[in-house]
Amino acid sequence: MADDSFSARPAIASSQLQQLRRLLAALVPANRFYTEKFQASDVPQAVAGLEEYSAKFPFTTKQEVAEDQRAHPPYGTNLTFPLEHYTRFHQTSGTTGAPLRWLDTPESWNWMVESWTAIFRAASATATDRVFFAFSFGPFIGFWLAYEAAQRVGCLCVPGGGLSSAARLRVLIDNGATILCCTPTYALRLAEVAAEEEIDLRSARVKTIIVAGEPGGSVPALRARLQELWHGARVFDHHGMTETGPVTHECPKRPGVLHVLEPAYFAEVIDPASGKPVVSG
View 1: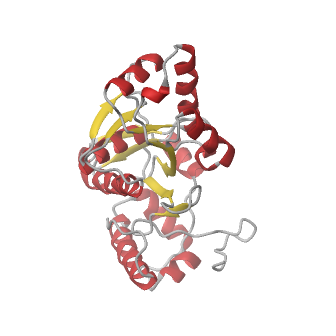
View 2: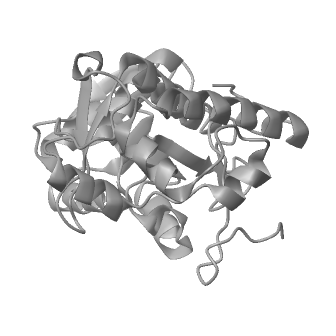
């Protein structure tokens, strides 16, 4: 994936179309889920352009994937390769129902890690940074992607799995971490624990807090509170999904505004009433 998310519009659209065509060619007929879905929708075998794709191809919803996994446990029919080609397992949190199980091949995993390196670079991370990951070692995909991507950027990676919040604070401070990766509410919780344990966060070297998993990173009041508690550390928001990895990252020049990783994604703004894309603006 290209590092420059702000390329000229025609070049972005051309790249998106080429990637889309390669993806569709790989899906049909190998992927049973999408082969049956496309046949039922009578979509064209070849995509002439992004506009045709928007107009003629159906949406895929989380409910569809969940129902497919229930009908064909454990992984459903949304698999493009034989099972032995997949090397990574993750699942969603299950906050809105049964967790979705997701498998990745080395190729798809590498693609998502590259998207995460774009997050770190947009946050101005370099090989001089030390990144502390305040996550457990569970099936949550965000930790694993971020940890591997930070290594590719050249950062020193400090894991925080299996530790209490107080222990995490001590490891963060003792190792001079300059970047903290966690959810917005957990960054607040760490600050609360620091006060309870009489740990002075001014002794921490954290200059950037990369957050996701909740909307709080782009809420002005919460951003301001985090920056106050962490003594001026910059809050850098982004969002992603278990199914795809990182999707957006904060604008380096406009805090709280998110940019889509367009070299990796074709984004649409959909009118919920019509189900059709709205025009630009």
